[in-house]
Amino acid sequence: MIQPEQLAQQIVEGILKHKIEINQPQWMYHMLKFYQLVPRTLERLLPRLFRNKSLVILNNLRLIVFIT
Image (cartoon, rainbow, N blue to C red; front, side):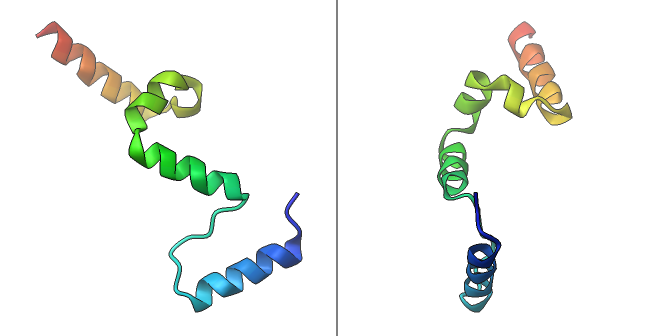
């Protein structure tokens, strides 16, 4: 579990270094970077994590592309 004092310190350091975002826990940073590299692959392998309206529209577009 993340200690509030540690998180507060990381937020202050991020502000001073002009960081755009701070990801905690640390594994989340690595997961987000991995998703940026292979988004479609992860969406296919882990559909429950990515089930939302935009994905349904994207699936419909893929379906239309395959039919025509």
